[in-house]
Image 1: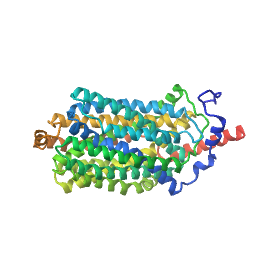
Image 2: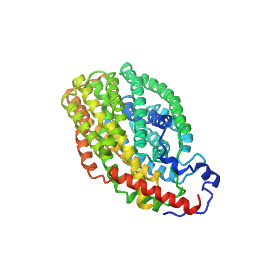
Image 3: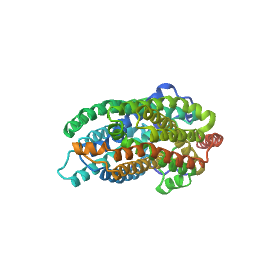
Image 4: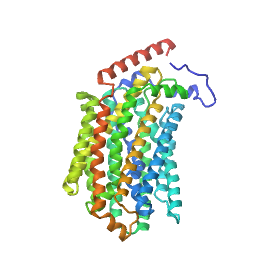
Length: 487
């Protein structure tokens, strides 16, 4: 176990540690609804930035800035790989922090406004006169946005294992994240999709309209982040706020469950993010109406909201690992429908619903599984590194974005998808060849990635009995430590 170090200039004061330290028994108390709701509001806040970029940034770069799909694919790959490493840096900073507000909440308080400002800036990038300079400026601003996002999202995600150690309540927190994120995603699509239809062929008008929307979501995002900051408290505390780099690496290097979770997440979410990157194009050119993206998104949101309340029950009945495999099955079946019949709107709705049923279940389970890997790391190494563990998991999720978007955008570029919004680009993108490429991404990618993700998760080593044993042993250790120090 890491020994407490003498206080240094950057170390928390004894007063801060006393203020942050909760009663260890509080971690096993059941969470009231208001705290679950407050935690879910934080993911809604994150998605005012993340879902905005995930759903509409490729379209903005290609349609408004006129960058080719292949260039945007490269920007996404490079920047999102950088973002993945930024998550590791953020996790290291988080693990070295302790204040009177706790370890994680201060980052939400002080980082949320810079994040929302950078999101507005991301969607106000002008064309710089040349394609090369525009691409460089877009990549730099996107990279800065990614780092700021990491400095908010890593602490937010790391907060869940610090709120409760009750398995079912962790499932509820995961469900709350799903609800918060999906509701904001639907709201974004309801606001932005009609603008795409209204301003088709007029890049300047579309940019102006999206900028105004980004300013509105800035205000909404700040309100949601403050609900989280004031609404939850950290109730799992260990007075080891500073782990060395070597100790942090040891915690995550020896964490086999984390390795399997990260590998499966990269694959599964890669399928989801690749599909999302071209969904607006799919509705515009395959289904023939950009506003149909609203209905696809609504089907996806309904699927996520329908499945989220059942996640704790699924955990209780068949366990997290089997529940995850069930999510992969829905993902693959939805992909098959989308690939074969997705050009018909009714079947596109059904396929998208089933895909998102799998996404909603597995996204909820991923957060609960990540919390379990934190407990495993402490159980195995006697060091609790929430930030390092979550940052590696977030690294995997960012890599899934990089891989998924690169594959999807490169694939449609291979099929001849054109940038810009003029008549030639519109006619080319509506051709049978390009429409086939879009359909292959929307259906084929979920099929391939869902099968591979399920194969990896079959080897995940923590079942529910193992988890219960770990938590019981950890409580015995903490009680012994408390008795030994007179706490």
